[in-house]
Image (cartoon, rainbow, N blue to C red; front, side, top):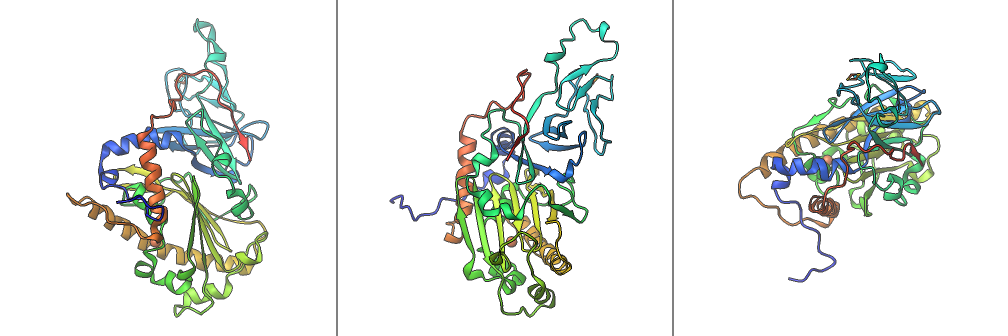
Length: 392
Ligand code: FES
Ligand SMILES: [Fe+2]
C-alpha cells in the first residue's frame, strides 16, 4: 500500500459529522480561529453603523468607526456583562450599555460610567471592549477571534486576482437577504456535509438535472490551493429543453467590470473553512455555512450586483436566482439524506472520486485543525488591542 501522489485523501469518518464532542472541538479549533464572513461594506454605510455576528458561541459587534474604518468587539459590556447591542439598533457615535449606561467609543474604548466617582477602581484604559480582528477582503467583511490570525488576504494568495473584478466595496445588495439574517436558510445536516456537497460536482449528473442541461459538466474544473478552492464551469451553448434555463442562456450577460470570458462562465470559491462565494456573470452570492447543532446548519448569505448592471443582466439575474433556488432545494434534500445515512452505526466512508478531490482537501484541513493545539483565541481579558480594521 504505497501512498501515491495520485491517491485522493480519505473522506472524514462518520463521527466527524455526528459526534457532539467533535462539534465542540470545532468551536475552538475551527470557528474561533478562522476568518468568518460577517457582512459586506454596504452593511456599514456610515460611522456608527453596526452589525452583530455569531461566531463560535460569542456575539461579535462590527462597527464603522468615526474615521470610516472598521472595528470589532465582543458584544458584551465590561461592567457586569450585559449584551450591548441587540439588532436592529440605531446608529450612533457611541455604544451605550442598556443596563447601567457605561459608554464606549466606536473603537471600543470606555468613555465613562454614570456616577463614576462611586466606582473606586474604574481604570478606564483597561476597561475597553474586548477586541476582535476584522478585515475587509474585496469589500466582504470578515472577523476572527484569534488575535494572532494571519490576515485573510495573506491566507488566500492569488484569490484577489482570480475573483476581484466580481467583488468590491461598491457592490449593491439584490433582494432582502442579508448575511446577518442567520436564520434565513437552514439545512438538516452537519455544516461539513453542506460544505462537502458544495465542494464537488460529481453529484451534478445524478442530482441536478437542470444544471446538467445548463452547464458543460465535462469542463467542470476545481483548482485546489492551500486555503481555498476555485471552481469554473461553462454555460452550455446548446439551448436547454427547460424554458427557464433556456431564457437564462439567452439573457445571460455580464455585469460591468467583468471580462468577455466571464460571460458564459459560472465560477465559485470556497475559502476554508466555511465561506462560499458564487460568481455568476449576472450576480454574486456571498454566504457561509454555520453550525446550528450537530445535524443542522444555517446558510446566511446575500446576493449582490455591480453598480450600473443593465436591465438585460438584471433579467438574467432573476432567472438565475430562480434556478439557484431549485438547485438549493435539491442540495438541501441531498445533505439531509447524507446526514441520515452516515449516522448508521458501522458505516465508514468509501473512496473519493477525482472529481471529489476538494472534499479530500477539506477533510485534510479539518483533521489537521482538530489535531492541532487550539489557538489562544479566548479574547480573554487581554488588555492590548489586536490590530484593527486591516484593509485590503
Ligand atoms: S452591565 Fe453594562 S453598564 Fe452595567
Ligand atoms: Fe449540488
